[in-house]
Length: 63
Image (cartoon, rainbow, N blue to C red; front, side):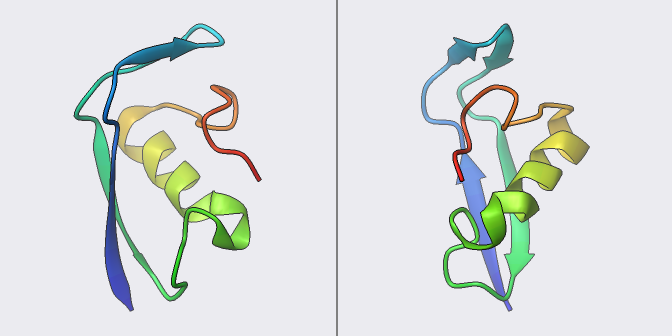
């Protein structure tokens, strides 16, 4: 399993949800690209757990 880190590079507001520069999560995954594989659920769940932000609702995770 590999450890992946995803970080917000630029602050943005989308659908009333604010993503601040520097927000990040780490996810251990068996997929080679967990953002695109399995619908991105691992990163979506991690952002929801760590920051309380639903990336799908913010339209920032498309699958």
